[in-house]
Image 1: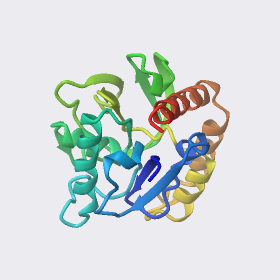
Image 2: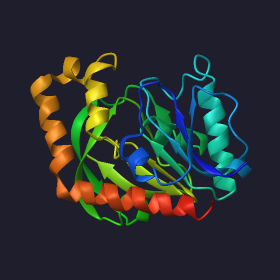
Image 3: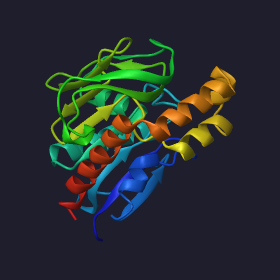
Length: 229
C-alpha cells in the first residue's frame, strides 16, 4: 500500500484545521478512536490532534495507548510525528514526561514564547499569540529540546527526534473555532462568551506573525512527510 500521512483523532469533530489544509496535496488517511493503527511501512507521517479527554484516561479510551505506542515506534523509525494539544501530551507522556491533570485553566489566545528555532514552528523565535484550550500539562521529556514556553506552561512545545509536540493549537482555523463554539461540550462560547470567541477568531485570521508561523511550520512538516512517500 502507498504511504500516507495518518491523522489520529480522539474526537469526531476535530478537523485538523491548518494541518489538514497545508497537507492536502499529500495522501492522507484518518483513524478516529482506533486501536488498530496502520503498520509503520504505510506511514509517511503522523498527526495526533486534540481532544477533550485527558491523556491519562487510557482505560476509558484504549486508542490513547495505541497512539502512544505508535508514536514511539514512529519516532524510532524517524517518521515525522506532530502532536497538537492532547497529541502533545500523549507523546510527552510516552517519552517519560510528567503529566499533570487540571494544572491550568487556559482558554483563548495566549502569548507563547518560541525559545528555539524549529522548522515545524516556522523557525520563529519570539512571541506569538496562539490558541490554547487545555487544563492538563506535560513536562519536558528527558532528552527533548524545549521549543516554547508561556507564563503558565513551562513546556508549550518540544522536539524529540522526528517528533514535535505543541500544547497550543497552531492548527486552529476559523472552521475549528466554529466547531469548538458550537459542537464541543462545553462550547467555547459557554466558557468565555461570544465576544471573546469573536475576538479570538479575528486574531487567528489576521495576525501576520502567527499566520507566517502556521504556513511555514505546517509547510515544513509537509515537506518532511513528502520525503517519505
